[in-house]
Length: 389
Image (tube, rainbow, N blue to C red; front, side, top):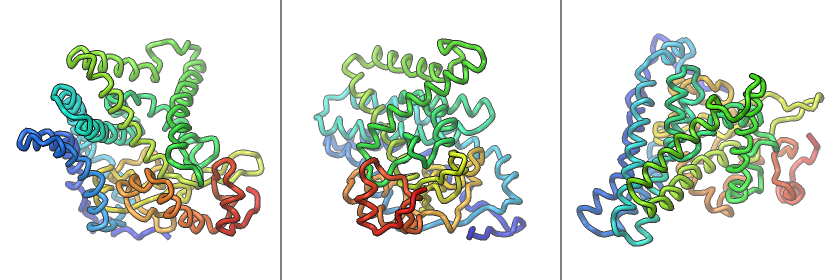
């Protein structure tokens, strides 16, 4: 049952100015260096990491859920309000500045290895927020927003994401053929080995097929896979010339950690959920119960409602301020910040999520996307109904 929204005449977007919180994200990478200049203690560079991994999950618990939905009658006005778009446009250059600052600081100061590691993680988190912003903008029709998406995704070498996600993941989500949908019994690190290369491969194939349909070779400036890749190469070359060759390993590690934030999100969002196979061999259309959701207030503010994932898959063009909560869809026990921590410790993840998955699908094994070789073990462990899909 869907949560009832307020009447349109009584509706006021209480989160309107909360979205400005996203503009404070780049300050995370600056906080550590500013503290270091004060104390000159390398350990203090771990403060931004602690904020993200400890304080943010705690804020989700303290602030609780927000299940409010805008009335559908007000959605067209919300979607047309340029204020929400300007927030995303303002964030893009701030993320670039934060990323460049982090690369400069941690490669131009004599710091021990553990401080450098803190730099990779904190600067990489900025790139991860860039991918989240690219996700929001890359789904929109206006060319300006598509260009902003390419701009932020190129920062970490993940410009192929818009192709792979929009044309591949949204088509194949919650099926065994989707490299971006995690399977029950598959740990995060095995998923990583399938997801990252699978995304690159699928994006290239999809773009090559699109260009072939237009009678073009893939080796053209019109190739939307190559366009952001060229920006990435130009950016990394310029940064290396400026900061020196010793900065390149730091930037590559930071880019990997940035892109790993997307891997974490993909792992959480559809873990173990499976679309039915129809008599004609096709998969059923994607439905709200094929995504995990969360309504934790703080993380939804910070991530542009990414956690209202069912509505996003049902309506990919819907803007973040309009995404809705549904009561009858799989719910995560906490927000993404906490779930990302759980995912990085596989035994803890399986302990928390496998039972929740079983209940979400009504103990029906045919509705679970199992990791290869794990089906029979998990069916026996949870006493599942073993009918075939």
